[in-house]
Image (cartoon, rainbow, N blue to C red; front, side):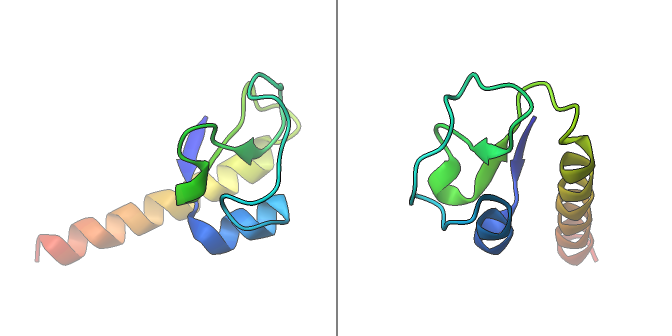
Length: 76
């Protein structure tokens, strides 16, 4: 699962700003980590989320709501 969460949520989830710190191997399973390519832009990823599924679901809802607001604003 790959999600853009923005810099504030990224820092809340990972404990450091995008582009800072190091994380687990990109193949780590069920760990919220910076996206290996887009992490510096505020993207996270989780491979096979199980324990982390509540975090992923919450962030997915936030991303959906943001996309919906942008769509509504552009198509008024």
